[in-house]
Image (cartoon, rainbow, N blue to C red):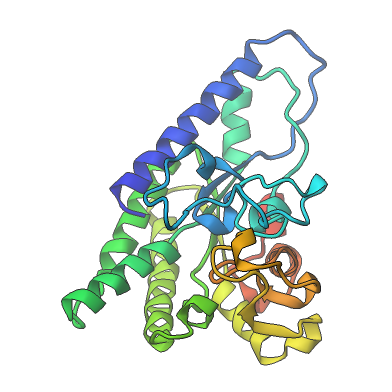
Length: 302
């Protein structure tokens, strides 16, 4: 999470505060106890269409997913901008109830302190770090420590704005993605592991500095590898190839028909089924995939 990412996150959060403030000043409604809200910051793995509002960097290589065949399994098969064939990690983890209550300042503060802040940031940063190494031949400096430091700055900024509960998804084994088929995947995995180790140390240290901060780290790296080792246990038939080739456009041909049996949707992102299983494991699954507690216990304050 570099400076630009942190600034974007803070801007999004500020807009969220303004929306909640508008609700607080709206017409009086029957006061109810609202469920925790969820604020999501991250890359394409949790993008629910916000990326549609950004201009593409290169028309020949789209960075957006607001076209077929993306969201082919979403309601009405409408392309929303999700980098998936349907729902993604953020959709499955979120609270889905709409906030319809009248909120005052004290209620807003209570809401934020009980809300979940989902962070899925790092994989794309690792891509650029690897890219820099490849082209500069600088193998001695990965910049992972700088990335972890920036991550800490972002979390601290959100904490100072009222956030207390953080759900953090670590980096997956990026070297296993179909896009890496002709590259040195092991290097990517080593960078991801270094990042994940740093992330764990960072959250541990922040809890000692920031009173009331609680977190759960989802081990996406470990869950992915566990699935790759025994795909049939999760009813996958292919955890290597992409169901939808390339940038997943009609020009590339039709996607596979058995989408629930594929781990990768396109050359980089996972299918709706993979996201569903991962979210279930992180929310209330085996202890081995979340540290120090799972998402459910974090939400419940246990």
